[in-house]
Image (cartoon, rainbow, N blue to C red; front, side, top):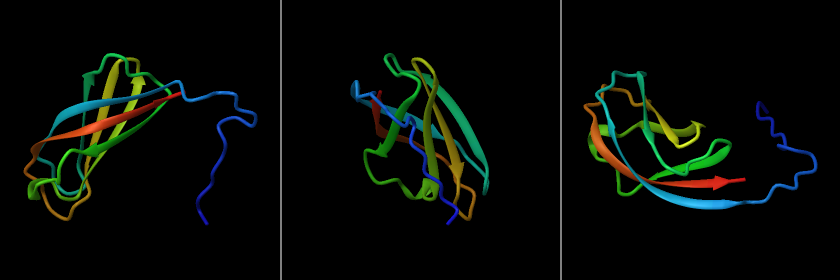
Length: 105
């Protein structure tokens, strides 16, 4: 197996300190096959070292099927989205929305 799992701390005393949900509206640009783009937006209260999960509010339309959207926060109060075209064709882009779930420790 090529998968390695490590604990963050051998004797963790860190507990879940916050669970927060945000609605996120974002635009997926026109992207060629294998291309990627990034964008950032201010989200007050978003913290670094959080676990972020982004789920669509509704089914993606056909113009963005095969797109991967990865959320991260490396600067406090700033959400960065990395958008990757993993489909087999150029996508024309679309405005999307989803719910961002933040687990802060």
